[in-house]
Image (cartoon, rainbow, N blue to C red):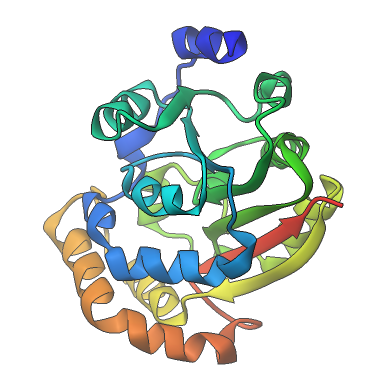
Length: 247
C-alpha cells in the first residue's frame, strides 16, 4: 500500500469530491438501489468502489463481500473513514501507472465505477488500469453520463469533460481488454429532466431547485423510469450503464 500512501500526500485536483455532485444524491435511495439492482449477479465481492463521493453506496456494497473504496479526493476519503471506520478506504489516482500494482493480490471480482470516468481526461488509461486490477472473470461495472446533446450547465459545474454514447463506452472496454456484457442507455425520465435543464441557467449544483428535482425524482419518478427503461435502453437515457468481463 506504499503507492497509495504516496498518492494521499501528493494528489491535488481543481474539482473533486463534494464539488462534483449535488448533496441530495446522498439520500437518493431508490435511485441507488435501482443502479445496484441493474448490476445484478455481476456484483460479487471482493468489491472495489472507485470514487467514494458521498459514501452512501458503501453501506450497500459491503453486503456483497469484502469492500474497499478509493477516491482521488482526500477529504472524501477522510469523511468515509469517519463514517465507516470498519471499512477499507484509500486515496488513489486510477490513471496512475502504478495503480494496478498497488492493489495487486486483493482479488477484486467486481469494480464499481459510478459517474467517475467523465471527470477524467485520460479515461482510456483509467479503464485499462481498472481492468488490470480485476481477477479473471471479474467484472467492471460502470455508469457515466449519456449523450453529448444533453451537456448543460450542470455538467460544467460538475467538472464533466464529456457525455458518452453507448458504443463509445463499449469501445473503451474492448480497448482495455474486457469483453462487453452490456452497454445500454439508462434512466429515460432522468434524461428528459437533464434535457429540460438545458433551458435553465444554473450557478450551483447545490441550489434548492437542483436538489428538489433530485428528491422529487427519487421519491416519485424512479418507478416510472424503471418501467420505461427496457424499451428505451438502445435509444435514450440520462446515463450509460455498462458491464465488462475480464477474460
